[in-house]
Each structure stands twice: as structure tokens, then as C-alpha cells.
Image (cartoon, rainbow, N blue to C red):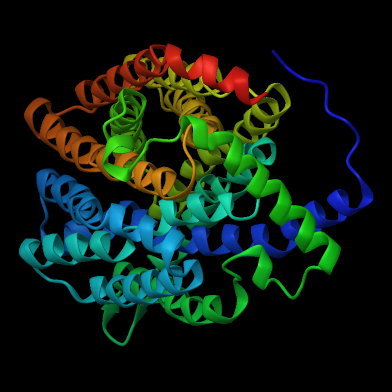
Length: 435
């Protein structure tokens, strides 16, 4: 059931507009930096594997081992955002991962590659779910999917921007260092710089926001407090009980399958396109960006639709079916480069557009520390798929000599995610009670 919304008061309109303009551009920008540092190894691999003699399984394991470190330190970070300081935690994450990203430019052996990727994952743990929790400090439930969509637009944007930039950096050869080394060094430095800026720019809670007028502060504080009280009837009595809720565990399982498909595609897309087309690295990077342009447009449309209808479950499941279809078609048409690119664009549309609906789901039935811990659990367990996807695809490529089996595996994972989300029938009733 959808309740017709009344026109917002002038104070509400001003507060929402000012919060949006103050927070979202900056959060979007730092997530571009974060995501680029996480996945630029996919472009660095075009030069790194040849220089260092890394086999496909080494690249797949190194790309995926990031998520083992990520898993271990995920939940504490989200709780610190809720209980300590969002800006302090986000700043710590950015500075430490920036330093480690720079150090990746100086590796020489597989063991060094594995260790630096593991530590990079541990350093970045808590950033994404921490920001999702942080958004609950500033945006009401009905505005949250749109805010999440704006924030997560950084994922395809980081690829659209990062692909040609990374392709250009691969051409460098300064001070005796190959281009792929400069790629890590120059793309890691902004995280350190803006980690320091974060301490001074972000505000933890609305009552601390001097950049809001007094009536605007009072409005958002009262709105969020009212929402919190309404949800307390559905909140678990304690954190451990909330983590054992079937809905939370099913979301974690669904996210595991989603991330398996997502990162399996992201990390292997440039290598797959290069081997298929035989084009130069910069041209491969430009083609890779096409898929993420399509995903960016789809994400904004789905986020808008999810907020308009207040529906989250099908706005998550349907995109994953689209992703499964695109990946399956890509496996069937690999002998045709144009058809493969078209199929991968379809996959990217699905893999990116599930995001706004999915991350609005946990906060439809949890709030406060329980929501923070649950989001951390979902993200940490789910992100183990980031280890499984690249690693298993690498193994399948070596075993079969083709990307077909690996891409079909990613397609099956996307379909499994859709089926788990559809099975979340108890959430449908909770969503309706929230509308």
C-alpha cells in the first residue's frame, strides 16, 4: 500500500535540499576514490601480469584476497560510525588505504601482491557500510534509496572516469617505473589527501550541523527521532539477536552471490576484452567504460522508482535477473566482440541498478546499532563473494582456456541472488507497514 505524500513544508524542503547539497557530492567523490583504488588492479593487470610473470590464478587470487581482510574488520567499523564518529572512522579508513594503495606500486612477487591486497581490504573495511549507516543520520527512510543511489553512482562513475585515466597511466614510464606502478601510486594519493579533508568537512550528527539553520536542524532531528521510535517495535532486543534474524542472514547470502558476479566481472572485464579484441590497453579501457555508462543511467532510474513506489525487494531482484541474462549471453557470443560488449553492457545495467533497493532493505526493519551491525554483517559476509568471483573465474580460465565457463558461473551467481531476494517474503509486509 502506498500512502499519498503531502507537499513538504518550506522548512522541510530547505533542510532536505541543504543536507543533500552538503553531504552527497562529497560522499560521492570519496567513494569514487575508494572504488577506484579497490578495482584499479583490473587495469594494472594489463601491464603487471606480463612484467611480473603472474599467471591467471595469481591475478584472480590477489584480486579476491582483498575481501578476506575486508571481511575480518567490517562489523566493528559500522558500530564505530554509530557509537563514536563517522568522520573520524571514514578519515582513518581513507588515509590507511591510500598509503597501502601507493605501496602496491612497488610489489615484485606474488606473495607481496597477496599481502598488500589483504591489508588493503582490511584498511578499507567499514568504509562503505559505515557511509550507509551515516546516511541514516541525515536522511529519512523515504529519501534513503535516492541518497544511496546518488552515493553508489560512484561505482560506475569511477569506472567511466577511471578506465580511460588508468589506460592513460599505463602508458607512463617515469623514473624507471612502469605505467602500472604509477597507476597505483597516483590513484592512491588522493585517498590520503581527502582523508585529512574529511575530518574537517563531514558532520557526525544533525545537532552538530552549524551549516543548517536552527529550524532545519530541529525538523530533521524530530523526523529521524520519530522514525526511530516507530521502528523500535520491529528492532531486535540486542545486536546479537538482530544478527541472527533470518532476513539479515538471507540478505547476507544474497549479497554474497551479487558480489561474486559483480567483482568477477569487474576484475576480469579488461583482460577478457583485451584477449578477445587484441586492442591496445587504452582502447580496452575506453570500451570497458561503455558498460559502466549504461549501468550508471540504470542505477539512477531504479533508485528513483524504488523511492517513488517505496518498494525495495523487486527493485533488487529484477536487476539481478537482467545481470544473469547479460552474463549468460556474453558467454554465448564470445567470438563476436561487438555482441560481447553489448551483452556485458546489459550485465552492467543489472549489476549496478540493484544497489539502491538492496541497501534500503535492512533499514526497513532495523534501526540504530542493530541496523549498523546488521549492515556490517551483510556487507562483510557478502563481500566474501569478492574473493570467490575473481578467484574462481581465474581458475576456470586456466582450466578451460576460455572465459565462457567463468562467465556462466557469474551468471548463475546473479540468478541465485535474485531468487534469494524474491524469497524474502516477510520483508514485504514490513515494507508495507513502513509506507
